[in-house]
Image (cartoon, rainbow, N blue to C red; front, top):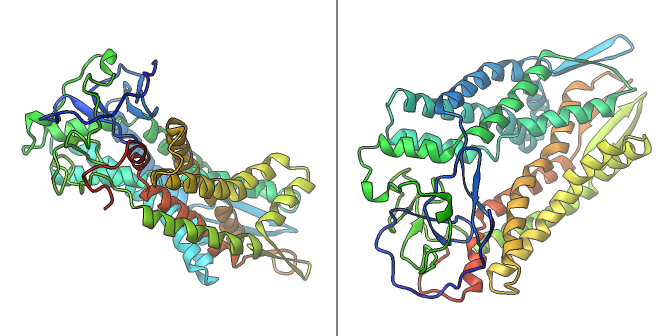
Length: 444
């Protein structure tokens, strides 16, 4: 779809209703509502954000995928992921055992992170999305259905079964040549569960679900139920405004455009003109920068082999793969554990500076940068998952043992603080700063 030139954003008479309108969640441009044809996407003509996508998958498909994921969930966390054999000494480990092993080693922060991202959040995501799909199919939608769907959307970013699966593959490469490795039932179940969760995030049409929830909500009002228009209408209106200048607020959870209120009348989530908090983002970003020093300087893993103990940092582990000829695995760990945190911190600093009115240029490119760091941030947990598995499975006495080391806690905190900083940043603040001061308050 061709993009239009950036519209001039000048004061104009307010629009009396949010009917048949939508606003871009990343630049606040007010547009005509659109329902793209199946398999297509509609993008904002100003910042390039995906405003809507549509698929042929009905609610039933989402329900079946959730049921499949729930069935796969239990063997994933309870069955051995891998088994290792060194000189007739055999060890195997499950995901739960890796969590317990970290807890017993007094690395409770790391243990909690693995527990939440690989065990708790996937279960909550599958359960909440499954209950929402079932409620829609049975026509038993209520206000709690909207809250459950809001919860499912919030959990998508923090559910990391796919990252954990890549961590398993990295561990296999790391231990090849040292031990004989066999795949367990937990690995196959984890692979199937990761594919199921990826399918859910791909085919689940959020707008379709919100329409079903709104249509069954007796408190709904027709004036905020937009009617689909043709794709050609995805252009700024003659009185091109932002939603804020029109006196409207976009719900950050369900993207419903409406008049200002304490809570969204469709999903019940809190409403703010801007959800961003620049001071909080700076605090988290500075914290992440400081934490990055011990995360890279301290050892992240301690290895004991034939009675000789050694420790290694993240960089040491990367160099190990390069020296062993495993350049692809070494590069994956380098990108995920070293490059991504640094790039994310630098990118967030750039976005925050722009949101404060400095260098308000290349906003479309900066909006794309925001979407990029939002996507890649979770992959920094890769090294933590590898260490968790090694800590749980490699215990062969004097032959070979692996223990987690202090840098794991610091690195886990780096990932959490950078992800939270991205979450609390509202990219619309950059466009506000570029368009000059407004009369209303943006920061909450």
